[in-house]
Image (cartoon, rainbow, N blue to C red; front, side, top):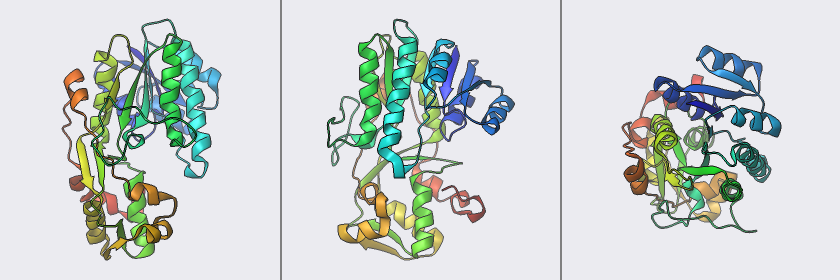
Length: 305
């Protein structure tokens, strides 16, 4: 297939590109800069210039393809709600180009949107409305474009998608421990983060594209580990950074973690049992703690935040 990939030079998207090419697919990658275009061309990817804000470029890319994998997202938490609405519009544009066809649109969401404190499954639907987490906009957009005749499915990923090149939550915690002189957790630290390696995540996207529900509408969970205790993550960071591992109350956490306090306290275990049954997906890579124990996560010269 000829697959249009947004976020094609990103942490997960670049792994998706290599996974697709290795299986004989052609990739059309969205590039918003000359550097991104050069990187994609060097990887054997057909370059499509545009951005998430350029909705016409998204429609053109989707129209030229047999399927779309949408991994791009603007990770600027100072404008989180605004960026979630940008994603909504991007999904609507991609869906409009595919409406009335059997070409699949795979969008990215998060398991952290689902009901906390219990094991979330693919059957769960995030809460909408004024009090909802803004990231729900992506799944709302998926529902809307499906109603207009697009074949769309959702791939949800956990708070930690880890591996070489990680620039997400775990590197943020590592840098925070360096800056504050302690590696902290909230309360007893027994809150759970599901996790997946980026290469397993990329494999899931390919399987969802090739073997996904004929009518779309599926929800898949890219979860290799159902829940890693946050205290265990903080413990590895403390040991490798050689700083104390300490508990913070909810009040103290707000000061220590800042905007990240919500995520540090998040208890959001998630299952991928249904996904594995539907697609035959079996994660093969190391788990979060084993991956986190590698030197590359603590190489200051290669800081990834």
